[in-house]
Length: 586
Image (tube, rainbow, N blue to C red):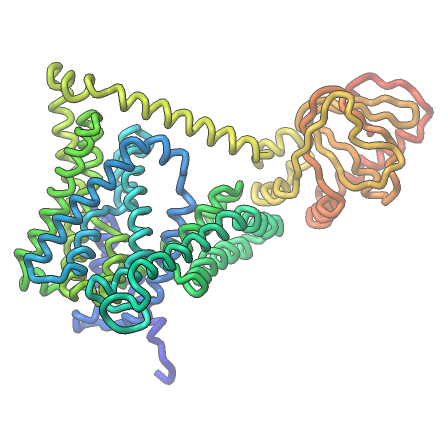
């Protein structure tokens, strides 16, 4: 060919083989992630049949990491995590420390350096939240108390790994790897100073994002969403996630993963977070697939034959060691056996953070090449066998439940702490629902139910209209509109009742009606007083938004103009006292 098509070839081979292997993995009731990794093995540099560009795949995979971490932040719930803090924080940290120590000691027995052992131990100590969520969804256990504890445990592990990703570059020299900027050995400015500078950069980045971000990022998303363009909204999500990640890396020396995570956390507070998650999901899925494929491309299948004992030790730590550690920790913390079994089964695998950390360890010269292959082999096999860990946990839990004495000792006598967690989770969800209700206006269906004038719009168009509304409340007796004032908004009554005083008439308008539109259409000053008769919830459209909606949706414009004309004609008729509740004027 006359031009370079390496990028297209990488995309084509990556997606095509990921689809094929992922489909067959799913048919075998395995997570598709196993298929994606195997697809990478097939097209990787160690397999002579197909060779794609690992450099290009690596950059595409970096985008996958960014979108993956953005998605984690977008679904991150501080309240849910804090509700189960009594078990997940001490439990996860204790399990990480013990498993890392075992992994480090194991690697040093093989003759690896301390740095290589630490990276291996950390990679094997954590599990994949993505794999766990898939497993819980298949078992309808995501919303169960034990399921929430398991998810919270893995989120704490994710947060710990984010911290490791930040600190590892600063510690690489001391651990025998390449110092950032070149060279080996201890950092040029000393370890403590280097750590202080690193943490200061992270703190500065976090402060800017968490203080400025909630005021700026949701506002940007809302303005883009008000345009009604799905393409622009998706582009805004992509720009914010990738842009913040890139800016974090360039300006603050923070990893792409941490920058994207913070961006997701900030946008999680927006009332458009669900829409952002929905629109970014296809991009996240596509690039996440390339991430797993690129990881598989680095795998050397010969490691299974060359180092079977090493691989067996890695698998033993992942499938048995971590599970037993978690089981013991949960029981020591005073929680029931059923909770310990759920957490143990959840930890019997490794996934995306292990790959990210292993790649960083390779880049800084800490992890030997066979270490990455051992981690990848451990991931593929542990994810494949993870369902058997859940089956074993189910069998053991059923055996305990079937015996009254066993149930009393292992469950009933340990239920107090679990009950406390349940109450705290329920309280956290109530707070989340109240918070969501406070910033919510209407759903597309509720908009039509309350205001039939919008019935002709599609659900997508109604979502755009809702974004233009500004909530406003009024106390009994409060003057909402004063005759002679300049028109600045139209009002839609969500609840309550108002009185319109015009030309000697007093007209009552209730929920589903609107007022103030006549002056906006005519450009004249207000021609009536409008007063709240009781506590009113109103939805306000500013002049600019009102005109924008009228221009964008002709079907609404005609209805509103027709009603305004009828009201104007009624206002010109001789004064008469209409019956309260007459809504055909205003």
